[in-house]
Length: 188
Length: 188
DNA sequence: TACGATAGAGAACGATCGTTCTCAACGCAA
DNA sequence: TTGCGTTGAGAACGATCGTTCTCTATCGTA
Picture 1 (cartoon, rainbow over the protein chains, first blue to last red):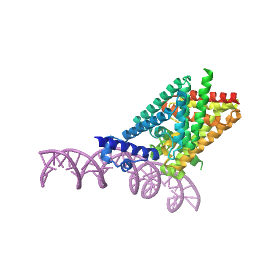
Picture 2 (picture 1 turned 180 degrees about the vertical axis):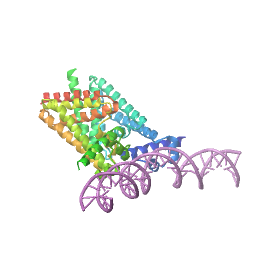
Picture 3 (picture 1 turned 135 degrees about the horizontal axis):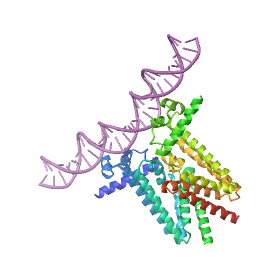
Picture 4 (picture 1 turned 135 degrees about the vertical axis):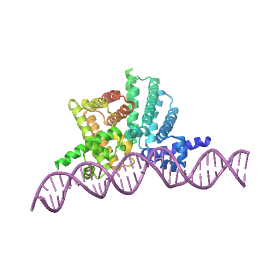
């Protein structure tokens, strides 16, 4: 049983690497098997279909994302600093050599028309993150309208950094967020 | 010869509809043939490979995008209004029933790892649009740093509207852009 | 040692894909 | 009319995919 969860973890992490690097549809189940060192039989015992594996990978990505956001927020004292620390997290991520965009956005673009489960998982992630931003915006004493604006900046920074291969999108978005927070603060 | 350009147009438009609705990899060349009413032989005479067809579709999308942006800018008097009219264009687009994201971002997520030509075409489009924004920001008398910030807002509004199915992302991004322009104006 | 369940390796299956080829129908110059 | 080049319809090809099945080796238990 514990070796089942071991195999499960190895599978999800291997699939995550391959899917993110090459795209979901470009990776066959046999490549996942080779990367994870888990037999096809076991793969299909743990995940009834490739779609289920994709959803599991997205859930795994969500945990990684949440952990990274939480870690960078931990060093910040105020809600405003926690909010802005998201952009520092993005900055470090954009500089990783194999970064090429938000996995959720990429998968959404690839499969949104075909897989309901995938679409829903992506939506859940983005909704949850919007709530996270909204909470911090409220705690920072800024008006509620600022929250979706900052969330849009975070979203846009990711696609801009990926397509233009420009990690500076993080700093640019952060500067914009500061302007938005300051303008809201002085208006309130 | 003119019927070649006719077939070419029908092909690109048909492929555009199918690719955008279902994703590029989910659409076979035979489906394109059926939708366009052009024989496979002629398709491969006009486009040596599917990749070439995809690039042609992206170029066609770019022309549509530029035309739409230009049309909404035409009604605006000042550079600032032209800039903000982009968000009105987005607003109308997001409300179209079959809208589901920026085709460039979607295709990038789907094929960036596999097709060099596609990646490059997406990059060209985004670069060209960033220049368009930068020109308007300069003409509006705002500092240059505001240009990438507004471009990031436009990018983020598109993915947010697609994933969250919320056309209000256009209005939210527009409000943020106004704040950024105003803050820059008062600082200058 | 013998036996039954289990699991891995990988062949097999049916479907689909991008691309090419075949063949018959057609249009047009001589 | 004859012959030739071109075209379209669709079969064919080779590759790959997700998924399942077969076969064999292994291992715990009696």
